[in-house]
Amino acid sequence: GSVPLDDIPVWTPTAGASTPSRYLRNETLDQKISVYSGDITKLEIDAIVNAANKSLLGGGGVDGAIHRAAGPLLKNECASLHGCETGEAKITCGYGLPAKYVIHTVGPIAQGGVGERERRALRSCYWNSLQTATENAARSVAFPCISTGIYGYPPEQAVHEALAAVREFLDAHHDKLDRVIFCVFLPTDKELYLQNLPLYFPPA
Ligand code: ADP
Picture 1: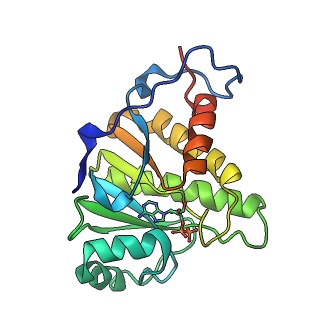
Picture 2: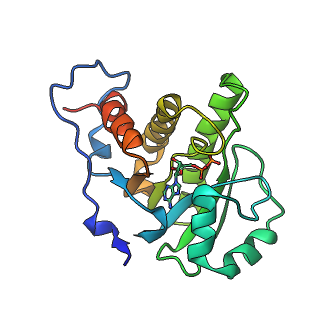
């Protein structure tokens, strides 16, 4: 079955985390962040983000799972969008998914290594996905670990771009979003997010 947003616990920073934070505390962001382990296609939420490719016509990994669960109407709508550039985002309906919308974003391919260009593109994926969500009045958004599968971006570097982009977007637009869920699929990614979240969302 599907997973209601209310069943996903909110992440709260543990006071006394040893690493000094690079961001100031922002109490308006309390109760907005979660790390959820599992299948993003099951989430009953306003929007899920798809780690798509430039064609938007479907692929492997999370993209394949989203298209299978949504049904063929998703591909029809995607075909009308004429692709998507790296770092940008486009929105569709969710069709057979429990999510109302799918936000398709194209992560950088990092098989040639990670430089400033790849870092910037990955941050843009997170930022532009949230921008697209808020433009469509979506107040809850779940992200997969963009680019860290087939696209080869090292997960221990990607987590910093994900968390920095979400933190900075929420600083600017906290009134427009209730929840941001980091939907991790691998136990190692769950650890990376739990380790690094206090750097970006420090405790009181
Ligand atoms: P990319 O091409 O951007 O690297 P992938 O789909 O290959 O995208 O991988 C991105 C992340 O999505 C990986 O961490 C992978 O384990 C994860 N993933 C795969 N299937 C699902 C799913 N059903 N729900 C959530 N995450 C998933």
